[in-house]
Structure formats: structure tokens, C-alpha cells
Amino acid sequence: MGVASSGNITGISGPVIGAVTYTPIKMFEVAYIGHSKLLGEVIRIKGDRVDIQVYEDTSGLTKGEPVIFTGELLAVDLGPGILGSVFDGIGRPLEILGKDSIYLKKGIHLPAIDSRKKWYFTPSIKEGEIVTPGTFIGYVFEGSFLQHRIMAPPYIEPAKVVWVASEENYTIEDSICRLENGVELTMKQRWEVRRPRPVLSRLSFDAPLLTGQRILDTLFPIAIGGAAVLPGGFGTGKTVTQQSLAKWCNAEIIIYIGCGERGNEMTEVLEEFPELSDPFHNAPLMERMVLIANTSNMPVAAREASVYLGMTLAEYFRDMGYNTAIMADSTSRWAEALREIGGRLEEMPGEEGYPAYLGTRLAQYYERAGRAKLLGLPEREGSVTVINAVSPAGGDFSEPVTQASLRLSGAFWALDKRLAQQRHFPAINWQQSYTLYEGSLASVFERELGSQWKVLKSYLKEMLDREKVLTDLVQLVGRDGLSEEDKWLLAHVETIKVVFLQQNAYSDADASCSMKKQFILLKLLYDLDNLMRQRIESGLLYDQVADYPLRVELLRLREKPEIELEQQGNQWLKNFDDKLESLVVIPE
Image (cartoon, rainbow, N blue to C red; front, side, top):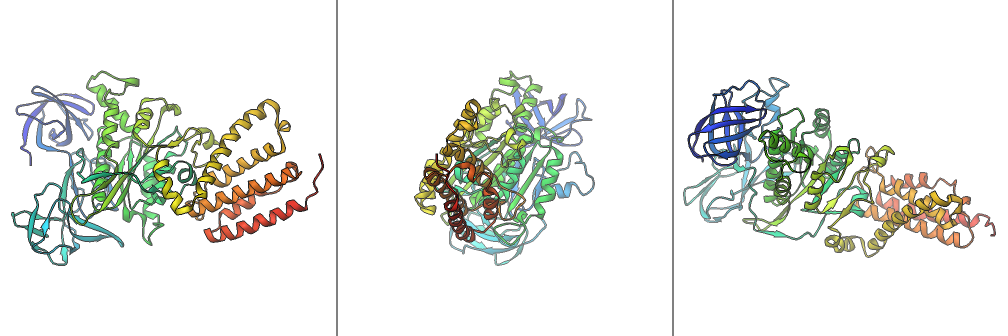
């Protein structure tokens, strides 16, 4: 617990205020500004002068008003009640803040979780056992299925249990365990959002985060505990793609951060997500989600706090042994907040006006992702996977935020304005995108899908590469100048793009696709290609089948479940082969 001290406002510049202090102050120390007690954070210290970024609207503040320095850093309460909640950028529950007005009142300070609500606690330790940091004390159920594991805080000293509460209803502040050194443990922890939670050791990547999106899982997979960047200009589908990932990926806990996005986009999320059903459990999706809403009309300083808040919540659930995923939309708005604050502080600007430490701040955030072996007993592993949207102005991927994010992430999913205008979604550009996790995950895919998966994946990449070459050739010599095989190849790649790379988010059967179904569908396209090439070698002309509704029939098959797709797909391929055999072959 820090020691409070005081000072006075000496200057005001938007969300940044200057103050004089009469006692030593810590960097990033929390302060209450003015008579309204607005929440702020010290971001620069010069002698007895400090600069504070304020997380609330500073209009109405005057020079000379008091500033109270708390001696503490910005922190959040962690415990039962987090899941299913909607917070603002500094961890205040919006459901309570919005009861009296649609606008956030200034100077309101609320804990993240309700200290009066009771939870049915079941102990998992006994008297006489040793408790170390991270050890499970017991658990409560949040919602209908998720076990919220109560852990000893990372900062306690190991000690023997002398008393543990029985199965009963308790609040998060009631004592549930007493140690021989006199420490009383409750269901609540408090943690500073800028400080990473400790782990026992870091682990390598060994499993994919399955997104249900064919183009991502097949061509550009991300590992559990990895980091991906989703850059794209306006209208390319960043928000929709992230919402699809939040619903369909195989992470157990989802933290969705709306960082500086338009209010109507965040409203859509807040209205839609509580209505969604969890595809993996017979329960609402919100039972394993947390939403952090910090829209573009909220104070810019809170954007930075929102991403650290989201990461702290993700680390907390990781420490329970869960695989968590953060969807941040978008880090460009966070970077814009840093640029505005840097301008107010009159710092030397870097490229495009962003502060010189932009890359450092992004690195501090991205480095908190990963897989880890966790503190305490039982032995367990957990992970934090980061998927960040980036909004480069004009879709320019050479701008500083995209480039800094690219260096720190392992998967780059480039969204393409041209594909979006063609209504091709997800609008992932397969020429610009890449992943660094392919080598780490190759053995996992081979074990699950067999050795042919590598062949099919190479085939898909080869077809997409050859299409670009042939498209350039068509522009020179025209379509009639192509061989019969190349005519088929061009048409087949278009079929692959429509049937395999595109997905229909409004179709219950196609909004998400399992790896097994991806394998079956890609193999069907591969076998179709081999069949047609054999027939063309035997003398078939492409124009003889050009009008055949291949795509329509393949799209119909795509809607089938895995088993039916495999059975009906093989039968359809046989019927199509019979049709080809019956065609009259025109001699050359």
C-alpha cells in the first residue's frame, strides 16, 4: 500500500495536466485530480513538477485545484464476477456506470467486481498443506460451466494452511483460507495492469489456435500463445473477422477490447455478443468473455490503459490453466493516443508524428503473450494469444504501427480492399500474408490429418501462385492463347477461391469449419483437378465443361457435415467422371 501525498495543478493541456508536488512521486503513480477527483496517471517527472495523463474529461478543471497522489500504480481487482462483464478502459463496470445516464459521469470510482455478491466456494486444499504462490485454494462456478479457480496471489510467502473455509457461499472479500504466518486469503486479488504476472517458465509452441476460418487455419495458422496482426484499411472487415474469431476460435476465454473504435461498431458488439450462443457449450458466449469498451469519443488516455487492462485479465485466467485470447481492435487507435499525449508533452516526434518509444510500448504489450508453465500446484500450463487489428491510414502497410507490429508478431493476416469490394470475405490477401508458426505446427497437423495434409497445402499454395502468373499471361496473349490445361487451371483457381477461401458468416454450416472438414473439402478440389487434367490429356476440351455448374454443386456440398461431405463428395466426383467419359472428344 502506497503513501498518499498532495500537490496542485499548474497547467492544463487537454488530457495532460501539469502539477507541482511536495513529496517524492513514482512513475505511473495514480493520482486524483481536482475537486472532482478525476483519475490520472503520472507519465513524466521533472524535479517537483509532474505531468499526468487523465483518464477522464478535463473540461472544467482550473489551475490551483488539488492533486492527490495515491502512492499506488493503476491496478484492477481480480476474482469471480469478471466473466460476462463489460468494462470501460480503466476497469469500471459500464452496466453500473450507465444506470443513471447514457454519459459517463466524471470522478466516479468503482471496483471492477461486485464485493457484495456471494459465490458458492468449494475448497481444494486441506489444513496442514503448504500453499505457495499460484496454488489452487478452491473454485467457484461462473455461469453454467466455467470453473473459476481461486489461486493464492503471486506475491505471498509459502506457508502452511491452518484453516480453510467449508463449502458455503462467500463474498470475494470474505476470508476463505488462513496461513500459519497470519495471512488471510480471499477470492479477490489486486494486480497492477502494467506489470506482467509471473510464470514458472516459458514454453515453446506446440498446438494451433484453430479459428474455424479456412484461409487462416490452412495457409496462415497461428499457434496457441502466439501473436497475429490483422491490418486493413476502412471497410476491409477487421471488426467482423475479429468477431468471428472471438466466437469460433478454440480459446477457452476471450477478452475483446474495443480500443478507440467508433461507437456504433462497439454498440453492435455489445448488442450482438450477449445474444450469441457458445458453439462449444450449450450456454451464452458471454459466459466465457470479457468486453472492454473504450470508444473514440472517450478520453484518449484511457485507450492505453484498456490494452493493459485486457492483458492483465487474460494473464489472470491463463494462470488458472486456461488458454485465453485477446482481440484488440485496434492498436492504431492506441498509437494515436500515444501520439496525442506525446504532442501535449512536446516530445520529439518520430516517424509520422508517433513518439520514438512506440515500438517499445508495443513490444511490452506483445511480449506478455505466450505459453507458460505456471506457478503453484497442481502443475499446469496456460497461454495468452494476441490477435490485434491495425488500421493503417489509406491501407498503407508501410506506416509505423503496422511495421512495428509486424516485427513483433508471428502471423500477418493482410486484409485487402480489392477483395472486400468483390465481397470476398474473409478478405485476407494470400499473396501478402504469412505465418512464422508453420514449422512449429507441421507435426501437429500431420498427426491429426495425416501426411497428405502437407501435400494438399502445398497444392493450394502452388495453384494460387500459378494463377497470378497465368493472369498476367492472359493480359498479354488473351484467354484463347492459353493451353486447355491452363484454361482449366484459371477456372479451377476461381472455384478454389469461392468454395474454399471464402466463407459465409451467415451460414450455420459454413461460418466455422473444422480442420477435418477443411481436409475433406480441399482433397475434393484436389481430386477434381487431377480428374480434369487426366481427361484433358485424353483429348477433352475445357469449353466442353465450361458451362457445367461446378461451383454451384461444390457450394451445395460445402454446406454438408463432415461425414456427409466425404461420402457425397466422392459420389459426386464419380458421377462427374462418368459425365466426362460420356462427352464426345473432339480430335485436334
